[in-house]
Image (tube, rainbow, N blue to C red; front, side, top):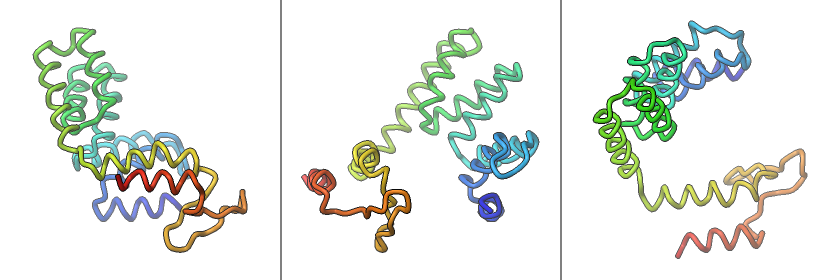
Length: 172
């Protein structure tokens, strides 16, 4: 069922859907493993600007011995702000596949992309992800309907002291 909706979204041009389909076809989640379909969806997502797909294509090329192509994909991923690509660039530099100048330029471009994505709202969202999710992981959080999690039979509540304190800290 999940593949049906990701496929529909991909057909409408959603790059995250293409990336998710590539993962599903690569791992066989809900579909048969299909390397051609995996690569197709990775390429579609990468062309559309999906940084994780671009980095994954770089790893795919690296594993196939296409080191220069791998570095081209990885440099693009770094320029899109992909953090994992920095480690892959370092590996290319250490293996003399990437020049010192190209490595330095890609790191600068990565930093520019990451800095461009910074905002108070993103910082607050990151704090929610890091702080709240471990505490709230046993709850299903549905804004508006406050559904119960069938496993715990407990409801998410803003009245929990740690949750209230966290959201109050965001106002400061």
